[in-house]
Length: 289
Image 1 (tube, rainbow, N blue to C red):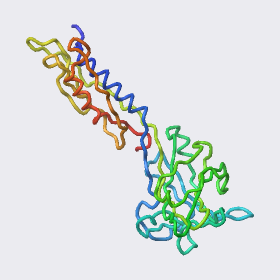
Image 2 (image 1 turned 120 degrees about the horizontal axis):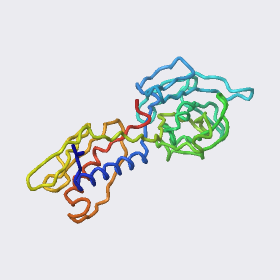
Image 3 (image 1 turned 180 degrees about the vertical axis):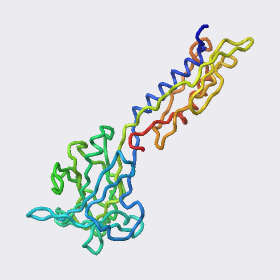
Image 4 (image 1 turned 30 degrees about the vertical axis):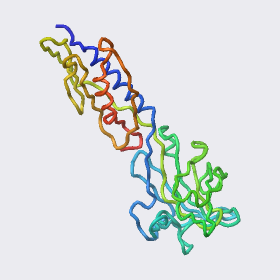
């Protein structure tokens, strides 16, 4: 018995679907962790918190007081005062925010990114800081360290109210396991952490290839996937849609419009069907469970 064959439009559509998947895998997806995910207003009761929203991709945040004889642990505080004042703060100050003066922080919150870096699938990170107000001259910066409980080296610039609630990219990603946020003047509040993850290409496979015969039409195989199964080659036109396993995050994909002669790889009608695949070309994101 001869193996089932695909007509040209179906073969071309399969190639296009593969290109879509490869394009998605080369893109990146952003995953965000709110530092006060339940919107609490209370003492956290600890000086270190682990964020395990995705078990294999965890990180922790700890608070420290700057001390010339060695920085000391400080209690964390969940703050919720609305708008840009909801996040992860500290016990002690009335505002429960990180304070600084004269270009030096009094306290800092440090993030241990060791697990994320160890996956090899997180290619960047950013922090969102709130309560950065111009009327009180609030400013902050980022620090990198290879040792827990040490402020380390300043790696960021001086960020002011223009950076309020804006995700600030962490410079020199991967160089430092520990990244800290500290106020240089006034007081500020860490709000969220964001990871830039490399998506993994979803498995594209055919559930079945069965021979299809139709009078006056070429012999074609029927394409079926996990999500969608449609007849291909009906009337000589590629009319297939290949599904990809759905995931929580996807990369934006665009397919340039191309023109082929009917005797070539694929017709304009098939191209339209292929463009529609963009919405279903979804990738598994490394940071998803």
